[in-house]
Image (cartoon, rainbow, N blue to C red; front, top):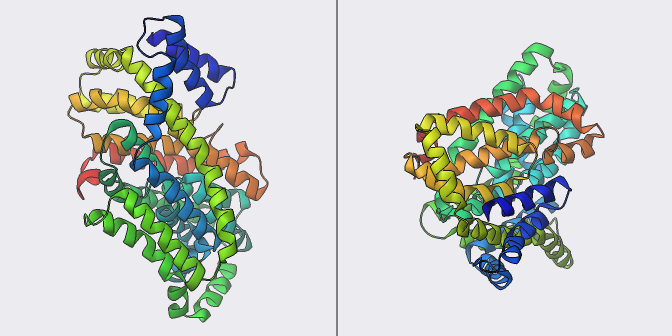
Length: 428
């Protein structure tokens, strides 16, 4: 049955079916071909309903909704001005300010493409005005946007938790330091790029002067409420005050208060449209979650996780070797398949193997998500590349080539995170 399920799934992908449809066919056909197989059609439908009938899953639409509300108000530009005020006059200060903006905006959106779109729309024109090549500016936001899936609240961490039963709150906390490490590696790359190719110091100085004239207090107050968002969300979770789902509820209420009454960037009449936009964004995810849950149950009945565990345990006898192979496979996989279905399919199968080798489940979640996040900016199918290319009107492959040095920095950060578990686990 495992062979039938996987064959149908792979054939569906080759025929360019949507991933959800391919998983659905892979879940249904084994039961249709073998009436004695426990996962019949009735069981599949019941499993799909149960798969999305859970409290933790509510965090996904709520975080998406709060991110859309904050995005409407141009929050990314307010964050960028705060960071540019402090480091904008230094070498590579403006590109580094974009990376820091992606880091903090990720704590609002929880999504890589959403972070790329929101930060890129505001900051790419600024970098181009300062003399930076537009493709280079696009590469910064496409790679930096991946931080939206590492810095909590991360939709990918929620999916890993749903697929494996690992605490989403622990995953959120564990993602903080790895996200900062990745941002530091990207900033070092930006600094080295400026050393090699130089910068238009006159334009940067003139722009910084305008920023300076606005004054620190005004800039800080403009960005204060945006900067406070991750403090409220993570502080509540880390302090044991709220669960991730409750934190998502708070983030929606906070985003509405800030946008309606403080920044005044949305009106009450706009809320319904934002709700509709959120539903459009989350509906495909819910379908994917339901079908992935059914597909994983079919694989469990067919004893695919046990077969994988036996195969890997006989060939990969050390944790280091397992992690090296895991990184290579996931990096390649991330180039061709979206992170959400990859997490939902692979995480339940890899968890028993990892735990048998003494690898912490939370650390495994960080490794898997960071790997698949790199795929968002890697040609040929990196979603962040498509988002950024539409903003700068440049071919995806050209943008992908320009992003390669940053992808290399991201990969080096991945290796550090992989083989120094302390970075992921110290805050737990």
